[in-house]
Image 1 (tube, rainbow, N blue to C red):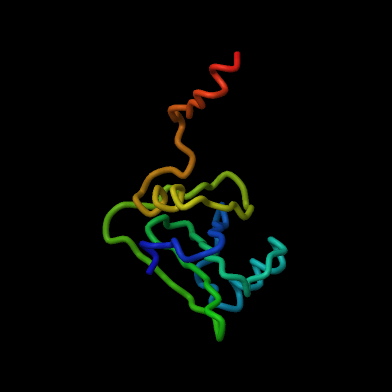
Image 2 (cartoon, helix red, strand yellow):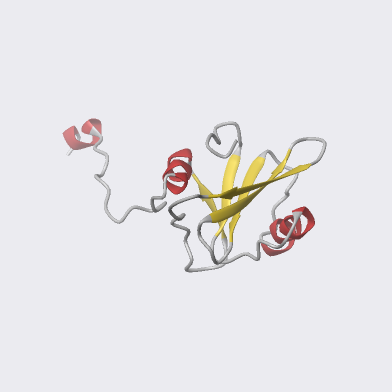
Length: 120
């Protein structure tokens, strides 16, 4: 389920550390109180503790919450630790995260828009 996130309106990660002993109500309160978002949306909320080989995800399914827990057998997630904020991810960034890559690569090839180049 966590390998394909294409069915969600938004994907959010809570950067920094989250106490993964929290259950549905604890993670729901973080979404509501710390980030002022509605957890009853079609959004995937991701949390990571100090050990970066496991994450929890919170998802509203229309009739109740689903709490997902994933532990990697080898490797670690490249989780942003700089701040304690909620960050929205693109599908590409989500794929990078689940593949063990950083969500913000240090160097990317910029996109070129030929029409804008001809206008100069």
